[in-house]
Every structure is written in structure tokens, then in C-alpha cells.
Image 1 (tube, rainbow, N blue to C red):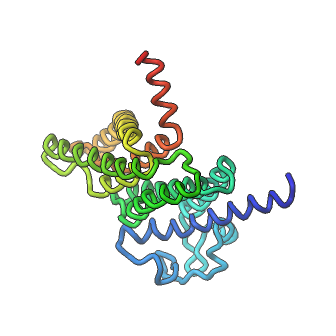
Image 2 (cartoon, rainbow, N blue to C red):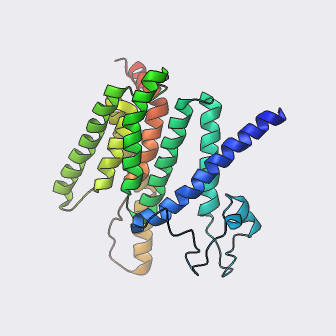
Image 3 (cartoon, rainbow, N blue to C red):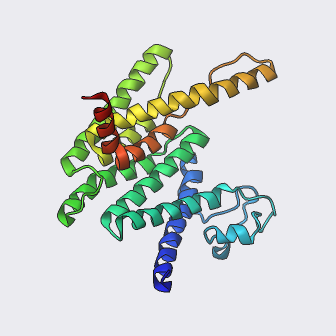
Length: 276
């Protein structure tokens, strides 16, 4: 590979990994309603302030051998894994779409959705910081793209507005029906704002596909993985089994990304297969 081209890819990866480092801060602080701007990053166990040279994405974790410089306690592998994932997201986005507005939009969308998955999985919370940022970008970018002449797989301006209402409305109805059926809150407000964000990216038609994919994947995971594991643990503990909570945002976020990138192809394949 040409050395100059290799350097460009390295810069793209480093920029993505650096954003991944900031994403780790958001994942840790937003669920606790803390500022992501100040104070500076610290070890969550001993409070040791992390110097800039100990905060280099991936590299610092490896050089420190996954241990805090202050207390020598282990540093979670989540930090370098998130940085690595976001770095790869940015490289793949630029590789597929070139240095373009579409690549930037896709990289930002995937980064935000990763943050949603992590916080919902760990805390059963989807922070507004993620969804409102994504929602505003989902409405603003189509206008910019219209002037640039580069729409990519994203919804056009008017479709983005309709998609946001469609997505949020769908989840609101599902949440209402779930509350009636289970006599308790079935979904949080975060799921509604998340689907508004996704709807703004994919438009109304692919919003329906997103909810269908998320429900299908969620049902399979719940029945095949979550339910059996929960039952076994309850039996070992000699306790009464109660079905565990399943964070729906964990399935909505990747389903939205699938609908964005391959939604039209999936719908076309289904229509062709069904003969409609």
C-alpha cells in the first residue's frame, strides 16, 4: 500500500478511536447525569486523574497493561474495545463512501447507536444526549445533503420529518399496548426518542422495517438465550423465576443501522420472494 494512503487511513482510524474515547466518557457519565466536559477523566476506583499520555486511544491501555497507574487495579477492556470499534466504523465508512458527507453521516450515526447499545445494555437507560443529538443531526444533515447533492442511503428532508414521527409513534403505540398487556411500563421514553432519531435517518418505510427487525431479533434472543439462562439461575438459587427485563434499545439500534444500509434491498428481496 502507498505510504501516503496508509497514513491517511491511520489518521481516519485515530480520529475515530479518539471519538470512541469520548464515547466511553459519555457511556460512563450520561446515565449518572454527569457532565461529559468536566472534570477530567479519572479512575473510577481510586479517583486518580488520568494524564493525557495515559489517555491515548488503545495504545495507553496496552502500555499500562490494562492497569491504572494510580491504584494498579484492572482497567475494563470496554475502553479499548469501544475505541477500536469506533475507529473501524470510521475507516469502513470512508472506505465505502470515500471522503464524503455520507461517510461522515454514517460514521456519526453508527457511533451514536453504539453508545445507545452500551448504555441500555449496562444501565437500562438511553440518555437524551445520544438520541437528541442523533435526532437533530438526522433532521439537519438531509438539508445540507440536498445542497451538496449527496443523499446516500439516508432519508430526504421531508421523509426525515415523517420518519421521525412515524418511528416515535410506532414505539409509543407498542409501549401503550405493552403497558395494557403487562400492567406495567413496557418501554421507556428513551426508546421513543431513539426511534425518532432512527426514523429521521431512514424515513417512514424503513422505520416500520426497523421495528419489525428489532422485535424479531429481540424475541429470538429472549426465548433462546435470556429466558433459559434466567430460569437456570433461578433454579440454582432456589428462587422463584421472574422473566428478566430486556432493553429494547439494544435491538432497535442495530436494526436501525441494518435498515439504513440494507433496508431497501431486504424489502425488495421479500417482495420478490413473496411474489407481491
